Length: 400
Image (tube, rainbow, N blue to C red; front, side, top):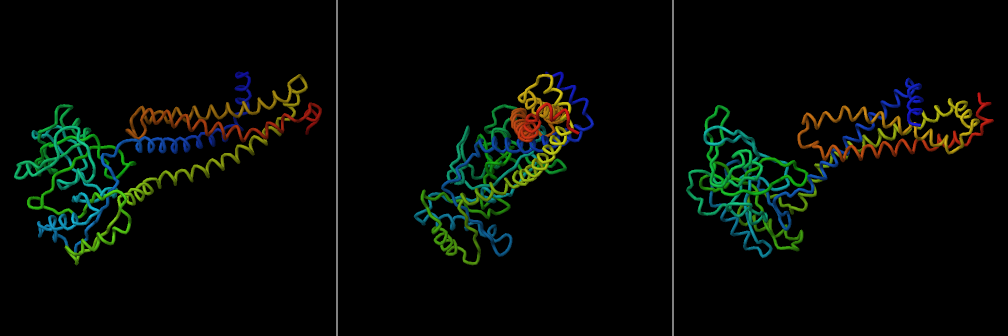
């Protein structure tokens, strides 16, 4: 039966060529969406490395650059003032808030210049880890014991530790940030190791990350974001009290106050926009392919009425005709999808998209895409098959 169907498809290869190309293109687009969605789903399941509830952030906007750096005591004033609020449990400072599309990265090496890796980085105050509810794998957080250290303390994630120190124990080890000419810009020492830190949220791709200690007296820049751990159940009415308290410290500055839950929701929506756009394009394409597929099948079955009538005359029943039409279409879809997979499999083989298209993602995307195309092919072939099956042998053989 399979051999016979393949012969029928081959004999009509000229008619089936454009239909096969449409199915192939539809499969590739659906595969892209399925792979994108699967990858995002896997990212969402990974830990971000901090607890976003209950947290608020306040971004400081000064009148001119360097105002905060010129007044190192401002951080202590802000901290003491905010801790006086009954809703506030922890106060910390960072370069930019969590769930913000901001990043800073640089290249780092071991002291001898070997093991060059790139990593994202974020400057934080000592209280940041408690405010963010983070957990250590090894080592300790920043503290006053680090004051006056020759190397800046750093907390690095496990991925960076494995790349920078080749799987060895990273605690206490030093590494450097270098300029393009190779000159050492900064010296760091590993104070602790964490599992993961994805400051841009659940859909941020895992990568190297380090958090460095900020001290107003020694750092050559300022931190303009305040991170607050608040009591559970704190409502939006707290924003008014918080802004009033900040204005008591510096009334000439402006503050953008946001609950981290709101920042998270905005970031997730922003990161999902490419997937939504691709889904709309794919839905439109599938609709066009479906109409084209239905029309071609209708025309094909109309042109094959004498052939189908002959089959009925020699003993085939309506069910045989119905199954033949549907099976031919599913087989044609299978051939088109196999050709598409022969091209798509090169992506994980060559590692062109790295972790974005790993073998598990490829496998799941393939199964989902095949299910969608098979369902589309089945739906489009049901009515033409039923129409062909209901013809009597007499009508079919006398059809012109």
